[in-house]
Image (tube, rainbow, N blue to C red):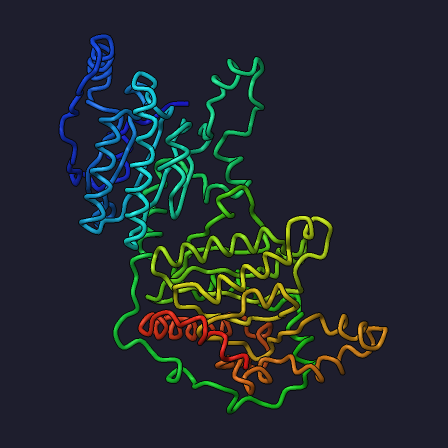
Length: 493
């Protein structure tokens, strides 16, 4: 695989002529004569003085800080001087409140320096952690190859992580594995595409597309609602006033129409921009959950949405709930509000889901939403069946479409429990008061978004109407700040 040098990548991603190096000459303290000769040879061969280059520049007009590995310099390995350079650059980016872009390509720790070099990964990790704790973005582009201590530290801490196509990415390099174990590492495991398939990285993109995706992500992360944005009240008020009387089973039936717009249609129609994320970052992903950075007007958010299209093929399982918890951590770190979207026939009922700890993950998702230190908005978009729906409900504000509903079980299931058959489903739905309008009367839902008369009959108009409400609600929530756990629970009294 042809590799771009660090400078070639920097020139490709940053605006022409905008690069400013932050690098001081390396100290080279206490190195042996043989090692010093290796370092001199690496400098002569590469034209750079260390395995990392750091500095700042403009990316599509936005100032950013950059950490870029030079693999040709001793396989991009990290010794004390490289670690000092990385830590100094991360700390400077934090002081200057710059987004930080990292582009590692490394074999890991520099073997010529041994354990004293190995432990530098702790310092680098702490610096990156402090940068993120300051609410600043850390975006990572994993290049070919990235392994060892680099992959196990600053390569794996990004808010958003993208891999280079075909890149070798993993902990133990395959050559070392084969020498230690006497047989080769299985093919196709330590490659970017496989990491994406397992929810470890968010995307796989070639270098010439990196500036575009990073700029879109930063546009969302750094957006703030404009002054004078419409308030929720200005967009039609709260509660149920002015809505027509609604027959419960008619609403349930309408919410189940196959042509009813789901969250994909909503994001495509009403969001100003969307950057999809992928998986837990820990080896799991569930297509039934959409996790994304998004912007409605100038109001940014982390979206955690149940996708009715994917659930038609497979109900969402515990891994989706773990993805949602990743999204909540991102929202806290990035100081962004959270938008959860309920639209589900229910969580998976299967041995695999039970073995994956479904009930526990529902509990932990509720716990995380109740306690998250970020403003939260819940949109009840359609069906809301069982604990899988409840896991996305706790929020500072809850808005619902006119035909949305929430039930402990599908009405047919409730009928089976109470009556021994499913023929009383409509009666059970009415008796259980599952509709959004019923929940609004109890203070569980804050406002109802009308359907005129049905979302499936006016999909684009409906999505724009919902998007306008989301934008206004997010703007108000960002102005108010996160609610308390006690306040979030009080609405259910």
